[in-house]
Length: 377
Image (tube, rainbow, N blue to C red):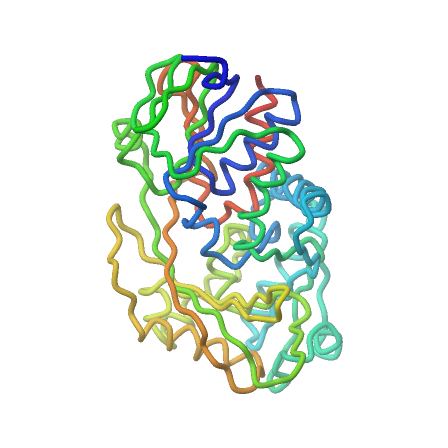
């Protein structure tokens, strides 16, 4: 063991949760080493929409954490030099029950910290010319949502942290054992004061008994990337519609949601069976990111179902006019999902903290959560 193999803090996992904790620790002056089993992050942090989505979080801790995260994203993107678009979001409604939910949400949470307003069809069209006008009842505009290209951002952030703060990176190093004050990979051992295990959907390598004791599982989602036949297409805000209202916890307190839920179950039970709700995002290259579905299991099926992709694209077509789409990529992501809470922060032994269970909101919540966790040091 020598001075090059010691640090104040070790972080296991180079996805957005690990990077956020590295950022917060480095800002406080700690010497940080970050490990990831791959040569670059390939998990849920790069297999998503790239959306920072405060509108999906319930008032209180979730929304506050999301809004603080948004502020950090804006700062980090500006300093690290990657693309970010504070383009907001638009929930559109084509049925009375959808419009009722949007109205109820905007009423009961008028002072909760959201930045929303209801739009009638003409105002919706001004926000996005790609929303179908026929049958449109209106929409809910929120100006807090942002979009990044996760494949760019997650690659750029560790490089910037190296350049600006001296982050030590060990990509391609699997941490196989933690025996405090030592962290061991197959190649090196490091002496550290604190460890933060931010290992995403890997419940098996480190502290499996801790994960076994938690109400946590894995969620597989199917997604696609596409380009449109429309030249210079710009969707404006990120778009979603009625199915999204029954997916996010922010809308769960709306009594009018019951009628919407029943109608969709009658219309097509496959929406709920396959966990389908639709978001449409656009990256800095003009490519469209489309998804998604949700299937929960400790071990996910490796095979994607094309009928699920067709269900996603069919619903997308019901509220957008995107021209002819060419699908350029199809993939699935896997993220940890914790029942009953928005994060899992546990200490399996002194000076070791597991941070996990952010569900599909890792991009939205990680910086805010890391600010809280590292702030306690």
